[in-house]
Length: 391
Image (cartoon, rainbow, N blue to C red; front, side, top):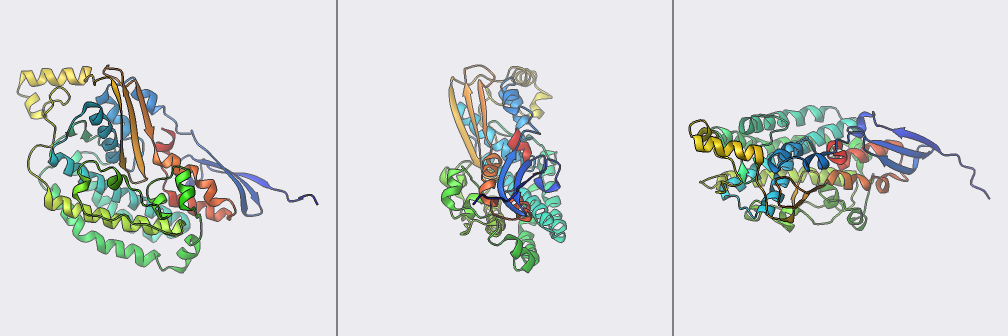
């Protein structure tokens, strides 16, 4: 007997507010049940990788801020790790610890943005105001350190733009002391809320083997029970010095991804607590004048420093011929940069491994067989940023 069901094809996005930017998903529906889903990307494409190949290594740094713009400092760090491996450059311990502090502040800030908007998508408005209360304070901390709130380009090749200013560590300590109680407030609003559970439990599930086959990383992968975190698997920036755990889920559904992200913020809090207490003395930048510009205060009073600064900013440096891959555990997952040097002052090849794009590839697996309303919950739970996907 012929199948006489009639399917309807609709577009969700690219202007739909719950598609988190300019994502379009073509849905084929049997009533309200999704039978096929095809994501379409590219509406925000800016050609970042090709742009970087006509810029010097210093100039390309500013492009990285505009990938996942909710976590610009993490993007800076991943790029700098790759360049430093190309140059065989070692950052001093104080610089590494300050990078960890900035990366974990950024992780919490990005997760707070995710939690507030994800809850808002599903219909829980109050959480948005709670999470942005903390996120605003974090943005103030980052502004004190970097002078910018969104795209600071502060983590530099070989270290940082400058050392921590007066009052920075005190502000971080103030945040660390208060944050666990704030997480309890989010949990009070959501975790045992019957509506939240009915919208997230058993929704958007993906198994561990399926997640691995799609190249999924980050909290989405760990919610499916796969214990992989770049900070533990391939430590960078002295993460091996810190004691922290990797939260895991079991069902790999929307609720597990929510639970993993909440617990991950508490582990970031734990790392921050240790990093502040153990912050070493000393320099924050590598002793490599052929790669790093002189301190700004020297430029204003020393002609030789001014000349060196000008030459580095104008001509940059020329790494040895070779290739390097550097990756970090960003808020969305493994963010990597692959660089190929031909010995000139510009990368021959500049390739980004964006976690959001690979995580998005698993979306059809999560939503086929579910209802249209579940598509919104699933998209929110994988925490995508289209600036990183389209590049």
